[in-house]
Length: 373
Image (cartoon, rainbow, N blue to C red):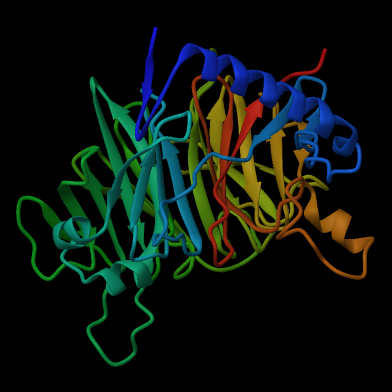
């Protein structure tokens, strides 16, 4: 039987002979393999935490195609289908959407900037907070803009806008050119975060500006504003993040990350002060994310804290501050087991968390829940 391999024709005898020669060549080369350079061994997976609160780094998650890059890490959220939305101070992309396995599904840049009414550079300049909300059967995103750093051009930013999951703007409040059925003026100086209560009320913190906290109903009708700069209860020094904590058999409560005061301030839904949480596990808290009655708190001072129903700490993860204090060269920006500046976090349906840091390369990472019994 003849076999045909372009451009030569071989017989079955040729194949048998060539196979024997190949086997002999392999046998002769085997002694040399011991002297060959070994392939690099796989490194052990990066794990943080302990016991039930152990997490393993997925080193491949969140990578962008060549030519795209993250900027300073702003916001990260996960929707009901475990799609993860990442926004950073970057023009390409402004927003990246991944599935939980790390496949890049969408990037929003030029089209998103057009919907927002800004140039790409202006979107990058003002980007900050991102919040996901399920209201009835529908899901929405709330973007929070910082004040523009442009001193000569138009004073942009200082807005909160609500969008669908495709980034189409449904309502804008804050620094708008004119008011109409989908936009409303409100005097924020530099807002940072949004939260939505079970009844639809919307809460906004002016964390880089006036240090005020404002409550609106589901139609953005203003209900109350509290706060101002200070250290007394009901006053803030960088009220950076806000969350509505909901636990069965407990009244919903408003948690505010009072970052520069190093504490969580807790209020009723009517914004009446209730209590303060502080301690060694609270340094410079940025925001909150709730999963299974626990709060995950990205802390700008190099760690992530997890607290239980009673606000007691159950884990302090990736503590780059303590680790770097023991070395001459800080390495919490490069050591995969450490955090440098956690700015935003979310947790998917399986308990894996996604962390975004306030460093110039964003440092988007996924940590898979791998409890050790």
